Image (tube, rainbow, N blue to C red; front, top):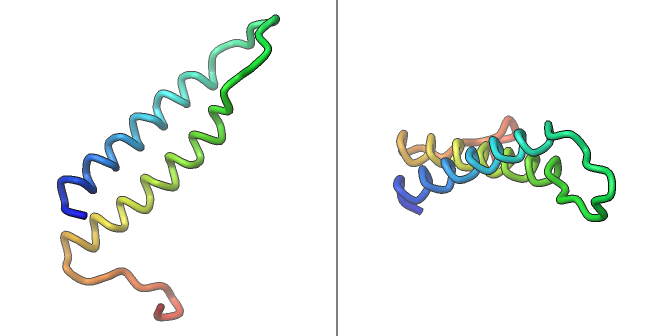
Length: 71
C-alpha cells in the first residue's frame, strides 16, 4: 500500500472510531429490539488504526518494524 492509501485507511478508521464513540454514549431507547455492537466496531477500528500507524511509520522510515523477539 502507498502512503496515500495508508493515510486514507487510517483516517477512515479514526472516523469510524469517533462515530462509534458518539453512538455508545447515546441513551438506551426502550422498545428497540436490535442494537449495533458499537463497542466491538470501536475495538476493530482502533486495531486497524494502530496497524495503519505502524505501517505508516514503516513506509516513512524505510525500515520495517520488528518485535522484541526479532520477527
